[in-house]
Amino acid sequence: MFFASDNSGKAHPEVMQALVDANEGYAMGYGADPINGEVREKLREVFEAPDAVVHLVATGTAANSLILGSMSRPFDAIFCSDEAHIHVDECNAPEFYTGGAKLIPIPSTHAKIAPSDLERAILGEENRGVHGPKRGPVSLTQLTEAGTAYSLEELSALTACAKSYGLATHMDGARFANAVSKIGCSPADMTWRAGISALSFGGTKNGLLGVEAVIFFDPALAEEFELRRKRGGHLFSKNRYLSAQMQAYLRDDLWLKAAEQANNNAAYLADALERVGATIHGSVDGNIIFADLPRSTHQCLKDAGAVYHIMVGNLEGDDPSEPLTARFVCDWSISRELIDQFIGLFD
Image (cartoon, rainbow, N blue to C red; front, top):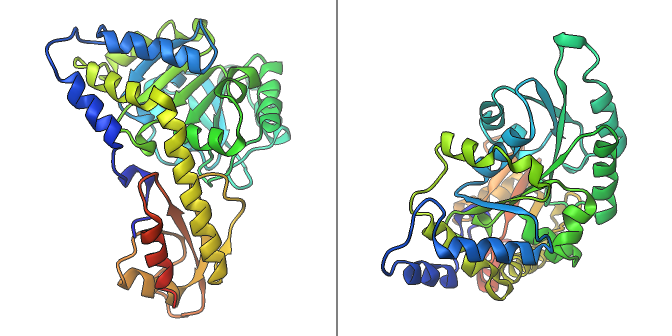
């Protein structure tokens, strides 16, 4: 009954086998392994982007921060949702790797920002001469931190707004696969066709041990990336073990199959939570659910061994009926039996 995070789920058996297979013999280091070349070509094929620049890193924070470092200058502003992972959960890593670029959080609804609010934020910068930051890239998250997905039309409207001011757009795709599975579009439609300049293509939350792909759809933005990755300590010498994970992830659309399984698990859990009286926040567009339950219910669930996070409210308060907001996350590996066991605690 573990719903705390998809980071805590198991690696997929096919990924583990790929690591075993990659562990035979010798291979050149630092990305010169043959598997890495295959992965690059496969990602270009998946995204229908033959000129895309592709690199691998081990963490989502590294992917986001190194991309933004390549896309912005130290005196730039980076526009993002006020709930964006780069703003809330990356310990100022983007500021560190950009050399000081300033994040401009934009008010959001269920972690999604509107074009009008983005334009207002853009117009609020680059109007104080040397005393304020210059306008820099826009960063969007898909799925968002609230578990919601931007539609293709919403993405296109946001990137069009950014482009009208000459700004590039980065996508934090830690749960990109979940969004593609939900919307049912092609990866190209959700990225470069919608105006995205660069993508952090996540894998760690979806069955990999630890690897993310950095994909620049605009090669001009990638000129400094390899130098920044090396200088930042994120160039793996034994890169073949990153490559092997991503190779397995892409083979036979494992990345989509795992995401669909996680999404289906979340939909099943959300339906069950509603049946037992939970109030669901927003839409469940992927594998994340935000729901209100009474404090007394949370206490019973926790006492029975359920693991998840309380996001709003204090578990130790006095009023047993007070609703507390929890986050439940399903990964690909959780079974329906475990979900049923969890729901059975409400009886």
